[in-house]
Length: 412
Image 1: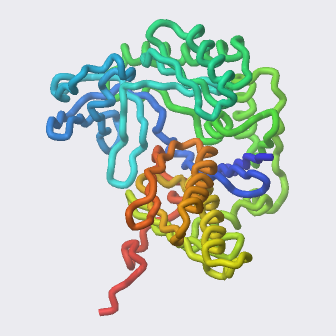
Image 2: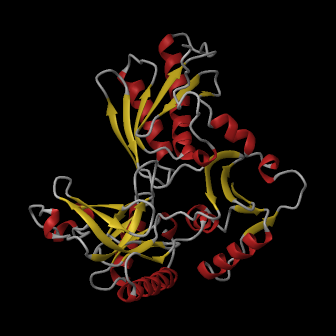
Image 3: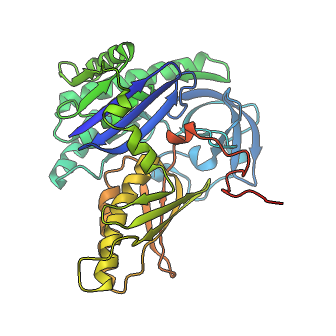
């Protein structure tokens, strides 16, 4: 069973997703600083850089947004030119265009924007100009994927595209059609606003954090939603009624004196899971080091001495526990960029395959796309994970003024 716990206070909204009492996802958002990912803007191109095949776009934020040439070409590969044109052929200074934020400003970088528009609904991600239908790889069996693909082709209009989400499995054409119609109305409103607006201007803002989490991870048939703010609860319930009319979700109002995150308990797990050293169930541990673009995880046997009669079994057992925990922590910490895992050396190729399969299976539950590159010549596991928003826990930390984030200070 999953529980979505939403804590709201004057400056913050924080959400925690628990599965059988274990924390698997955490997000936070400042009330006064709504996230920009997914939002639409009427922007003005302020600079075109042929050497980078990109343009900078003023969308009204502190830093100009970055628009790469691939995000200006047609979304459908079959409609793209055989040879990539120069950015100067597609963009000019002063040009106004409709863009959508795909990656929020992080660190010193501005937002990443695209002209490949998409609007997520409960069952469908609507892509008004993509001209293709895709089905989530997590939908099973294959016959259901084929049915959804056929249904999507039937529902879409010429030039439109869509992705049928995992929760679309088992839904009928009426339910999916209602979701699509709602997204079409949203898109028409955005497009009409863009025609009238003068850049830079925000045209459409994605849902706030609590509503996004309800849309993306909450199953009203089996999951429980616990909230501690009456106004936020009313807002979320109204959203649920619009998205899934007639459904009676399990929504609880928390009224006890103890803080919500202490009662479930989220706070304790956050302190444990965001440390540099994370213990594994069997006695091994992980050492977790993160930079702006690279995360390194070192696996150690620690106190685990094994239950088998060989070192290979002991090492493999530790690595399997580590693979499962790393997949959970990547999702929980919302890590992005390159990830290098230094598993303990295994001699047998079959054990290396088992560890890799374990990691792949656990990563399949993650909503964010990951790609496992494989083992390097030095025996390290290399992978990448997409980054969209700043980590929720990262909002509560700042770089130490004494050491500058290195963990060391100069003695002389």
